[in-house]
Length: 147
Image 1 (cartoon, rainbow, N blue to C red):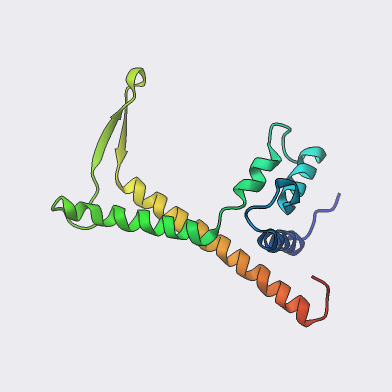
Image 2 (cartoon, rainbow, N blue to C red):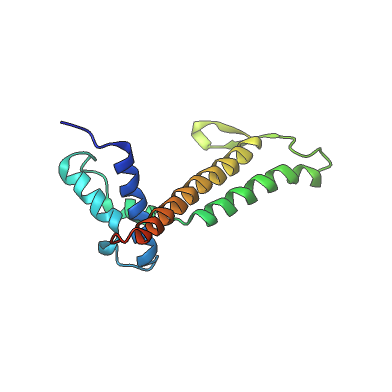
């Protein structure tokens, strides 16, 4: 069996994001493009039967600018909080969270900076994919192709 070329897969994903943006965040889950894709994947055996297609489709509704804003806020606050305690910027501390019978979980505050940067980068990549999708749509309209 021949695999789909990567450009086709990318075009399908970008088309999905474009259609989801047209429908809006308050849409019925059955109207969402990715709901149909995930349901077909479960039916074809690509995804395990335990996967919930509606949940995957709603997880796709996360907006990239919100993700970027949350990530940037977490990263900046993590970097600046040590100033309130008289420490230099970006200094980290270690603390333990008791977990009862499981012992204690030691956490380093630099973990929060890493999580913030991770959210920021994921948001930027999703925003880039969305921008590419709108560019493809604009080019298709310019060429007279149906969108």
